Structures are given as structure tokens and as C-alpha cells.
Length: 307
Image 1: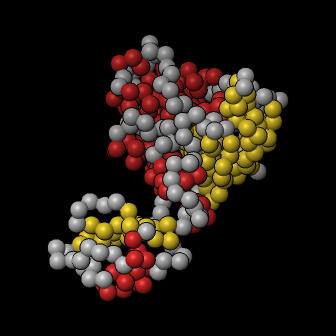
Image 2 (image 1 turned 60 degrees about the vertical axis):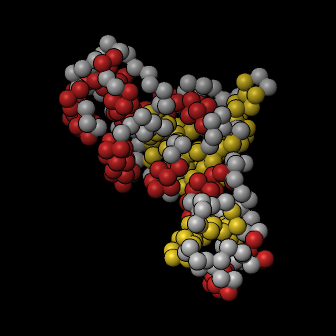
Image 3 (image 1 turned 180 degrees about the vertical axis):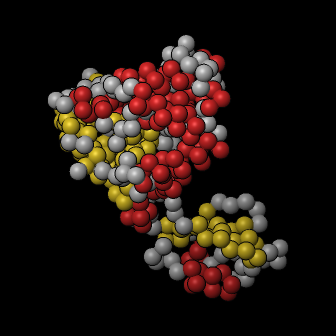
């Protein structure tokens, strides 16, 4: 079964198309990244799935439950960690989680899971403190616990590590990996592209309301054809590049040479031989293979061509 099925989904605000004919399927058990610049439509899509916004056309289903026709089951199957910090300031952490648990008809039998969430997210010494006395990072921890309190099989993490310290970030990702290993579907939106690259198997990118790519991580990274070669020059090195390499040079600090090479047609051995023949001497060489940052920048119109 698919965790999410989105078919020809559009959302218009007057003349603005926040989502334009999006079709997307996410298999159950995936660790999936949904990326895009600000204004790409990610939040609109999440709000439609969560029942906070109604689509202009198309349909969406969570584990086979249509978000409109079978909204009760769709809501029960989904947990969302929102980007915004939304909370009642006068409830304690434990009261917030118990209240959220009650919304889903879960009683005392859920107390052990609430305690586990509090411990896992480092909230034990804050459990009986009201929300208005917590720092921004602590409030975000509570929102994560709130989204997980009813054990939803599909979880959307909307910028979950914004304002979160490094130690909790590592702990959170370990916890999410464990949940995913147990079969939970995790959908991540983030501007920290290294997180998406490290955590997710499949990546979709939205831009200006359109789905521009949906592919496995390895396939996506293989589309970018450029790599960078960085040379630390020796003081006695020549500085005049061979004519065929001048167009491949890009700006670099003094004492360094940086070349942008095509992964298929520019062979590093031949490039180094040409540099040696030209009297270019260096003490160190680093090769930077493309990552998600380069691919993302190109697909959203902020980088070099993939070809």
C-alpha cells in the first residue's frame, strides 16, 4: 500500500496557483524528502493533507483514506510537526501531550508512550512546566512529541530541526531512523539539504507550485554532470593555464586553483597531465563530487545546468 497518493492536485488563491497539477505517490515505509524554496507550495500541500486547506481540484489519500471523503481515518493515520510554533501557553508539557492523545480517543493505555516520548526528546525535566516558560527549541521538541503521540503510521516533519541544538538534532534523527525501521513513513521538508541527503531515500522537489522532480537519491545525484577539482598551488608554481583549461577555471582564493570539470568528458588524469606540462605545481588535490545542494540549485533555477 502507498502511504500517500496525490493525483492532479491543484490549489488556487485567486490568480495565484499555489499548487499546479501535482501527482505524487509515496510508498509505505519510505523516508522521503519534499524540498523546494520558499513559496514552492510545500506548506499548501501539507495543509491539504492535514485537512487545514481544501484543494481546488484533484485528490489526496493517506494509506488509502481520502482526505475529504474519509477524513477521520486520514487524520488518524497522519502526524504533522508544523513549521510554526503553535501551542497553548498555559498547559504543561505532559498536559499538552495527554490532551493531544485524548483527541484520538487514547486513554491511560497511552501513558507509557507519552513517557517514552518525553524521555527520548529530552523533556523529562520540563514535563511539568507550562509551555510559555520553555525556550523555542524546547517548544519544538514538544511539537514533535505531539505529532507522534497517537503513533501515526505517516509522519510529516516540516522543518523539524529549525532552532534545535546539535545534540538534540542527532538524537532526533536516530529516533526517526528507528521509527522508520519499524515501518513508519517519514516525510521530511527542510532547508538543510545535507539532512535530506543523509536521511532520505527518495527526493521530490517543488518549485513555484509544480513538481519538478521525483526520483531516488542516487538517480537524482547522478544527473548532475559537474565536479570541482581544487589544487593547493606551490609558491614556485606557474600560473598560466593551458588554453583548453582556461574556460574551466572558476574563482578561488589566492594560492589555489579551482576547476569545474564535466564528469564524463573531462578526464582528471588528462587534466593533471596538461597542468604538469604547463608548469603548474601543487601540494594537495581535492575532488568535490556533486551533492544534493548542486542538484537542488540547478533544478530551482539557481545553479548550473545538469547537462
